[in-house]
Length: 316
Image (cartoon, rainbow, N blue to C red; front, side):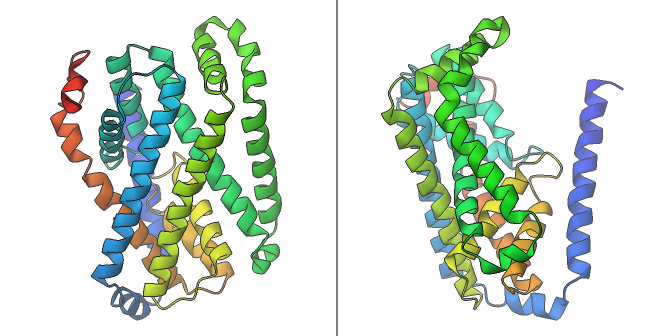
């Protein structure tokens, strides 16, 4: 099987999984209750959620800028912000929510001529975001009494949280053995550079918690619009679990698994599946609407066809 054929088969499999999960979820819902939930959608709440998510992504691009500075990048924040949103735009049309990371690393490499450091910046940006999600979910799961009824849920988050904490604290030491491996020596060097100034990982971690906290705020905003008094810990648990699920390369842009995650986690707190499903789609719509704005920097930069150094046109 050729590489192109494998890609087609993989994309088709993810599409089938997304469609299958969505179909299963819909067959278990009361369609009249689902229509009633959608009837409660108010444009003002949606616009507010879009504004919050846009602000969170601007903070995300600044987090990437902080990481880039620690790695020796000279590009201004406005260039990295434009590149960040262009990557978000690509995520809408690539199989997983990490597809745009390839574009981001490529653009920075073309601008900075720092191959390994470009990759390290993207991996660290994604990694700190994932760690913040795990910490938020790991804290929330102990504040949701009903979570104790789900076998292994608290143990899973406890293990993930402990692993995340160890990864952050021991990253420089764990990178030392990698320096002996020629092909990934740059990865170890980049890791040590980020931790060269102790304040850098602390700032990045704090920004990551702020960014993921904005996602929880959007969940609460939509929940209140739909007439739900959703406790903060339950909203945080649902957002964390559902977002982590979208990172798994098993669906098309997280469609289906996101909805299943929200339905399962919010169901712990007694939320009706119709309301959880509606809330999940609203979160996805908000993310997609903001990501579409990334079409502007993507087109201005000529997609993937720029020559080295031409990215400076975006920031001149």
